[in-house]
Length: 233
Ligand SMILES: *Cc1c(COP(=O)(O)O)cnc(C)c1O
Image: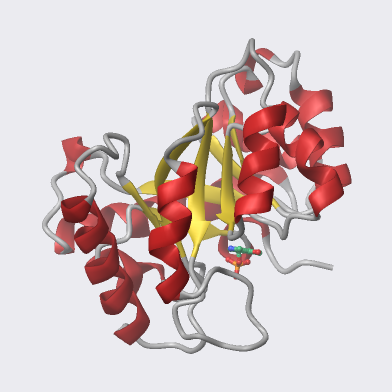
């Protein structure tokens, strides 16, 4: 894809996010919903192009590829304040790399991983922002913690000083807003039950095909790959 086309896609998606926010009753200045540009499998040059346009948050799924991009872009002035989100599945032996390179992790689902990230987050970096991925439709094949395990997991994660628990992330089983509504209720209930979670502000749900629906149902972060970067591989 050429640069012009990439920028046009990004502008269009940004516009759609703004419209969905307006319809959901957020005003423009709120900046309530963050657009996460999911750049997996796409080259560092595309990330740099969008960073120059003002896109700040990028999501990556594959660790090796992500570290190469993060390293390559580190010294580019326009990329200095990119916020990197890890949204792939987490293998136990890869937690150190994640803790050392990312600003956010959205796919936390087990205490053993949280514990390792907490121990391995470097002292000279701010606490790692984390979202718990919830298997909201209770599918056997899906990652994410089961809703009934959530309470215990929150209890342990909140004691980890090098992690900052920000909220929840979901990938629903099927189209339609039913899972979004349920997750919104869960997110609000946790906020009410846990006033000590002062940074509990992020509900990551919605992708290229359903972002407006997700925003209408309380999403504060949409993760968009294809609609910005084009089809993968
Ligand atoms: C790849 C991916 C996305 C982006 O999906 P698109 O359909 O390309 O917008 C969002 N979230 C997660 C967790 C992903 O792995």
